[in-house]
Structures are given as C-alpha cells and as structure tokens.
Image (cartoon, rainbow, N blue to C red; front, side, top):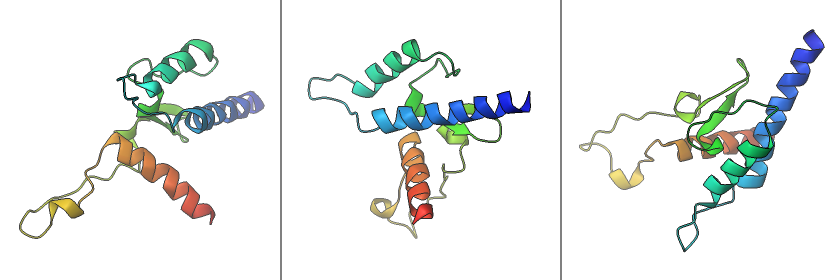
Length: 115
C-alpha cells in the first residue's frame, strides 16, 4: 500500500513537471488565441490518471507536495504579498504579486537552489 502511494505521488509530480515543461513557453498569439488555454484543455482531456482542477487552466495551480494536491498559486509559498506604501516605495520598483509572478518565482527558486 505504501509503495502504491509513493507511485501516485511520483506520477503526480511527473505530471506537474511535464505540463510545465511542455506548456510554459506558450503565450497569447497575435490573433488572440490563448495557446496556454488550448494546451491546458488538451492536457486535461488526454491525461486523466492524475486529478487536475477543472477550473481555470493547469497553469493556475501548483502541486503541494505535502498534500499531493493541486492548489491555486495564491496558496503557494512562492506567492508573496506586499505592503505598498507610496510615501516610501516607488511603484515601478514593486513586483505586484500575481499567479504568474508566483509561478515564475517557484521555478526560478528551484533553478537557483540547484546551482
């Protein structure tokens, strides 16, 4: 039973890494086609062994390794809220926390950690 749980965790982690490896470079095209959304819909329809959230796209979620569940990026440790004070801070020097900045921080943190 424990080995089956480990296998499921490994498969879930693999799916998370694979969907980001194959789809993260996709963008909004000049004609307005959201390639990430198209890829997300395709991924969800073809890979059903791992349960993915049905709302939003697969790129709006991160894998919580403790619970082995996909959670919104806002709940990840990479999502940093800020206290903005216009008297002491410049807006152009502030990174506004979004799901996009959280996902980039997550992957960059892993890359920097390995070097």
